[in-house]
Length: 231
Image 1 (cartoon, rainbow, N blue to C red):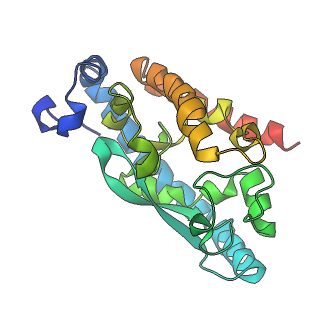
Image 2 (cartoon, rainbow, N blue to C red; image 1 turned 60 degrees about the horizontal axis):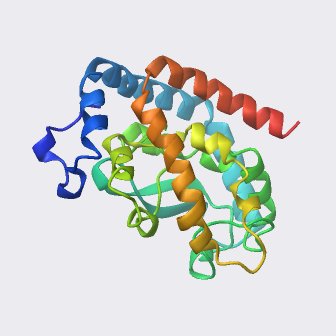
Image 3 (cartoon, one colour; image 1 turned 30 degrees about the vertical axis):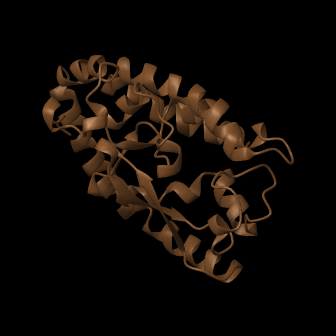
């Protein structure tokens, strides 16, 4: 997980707001290599161990509603690269064409099995495939769709110096994000003007204080948060 030379970064990332974060990360090359090795080894092990879960969840999804097992959506990761994220489908087929790109509380597009998968975050398991390929990492800024990335400030683009993550401090703090939206309000506008800036403050702080060991503790905290939330 090496950081590119400054002049090799996308032009829109070569700005004075990104530079401080870039310099900090360049000094942590060894740690970033260890982070990538950890991602590869753990994603392989978990894919093997969780294979039975993949099969069971896949069957439940197919029996529950029409449509594919996986939901593939274009997201943005390191250096602004577009990739397709893997998730178990938790909504009706073509849900993103029949509503907002963010999920609201009691969203009628969510299927019966989808509610359970979201509750225990089991819909995120397929992202192990994205981690293995290098498009994602275990801990990092959650990948946004291009529409929302287009609203990034110059400083927010610093989060694109590293691959998108499955979990982060912001993910934990905003784990009930859908409950913030009120009925009949413009969810896209609220997300862009209120939620996104606040989440990015947390993400940028995490980037500035990057530490692989702390990321391991954050993984444990994420698991604890999911268990506590559902007891």
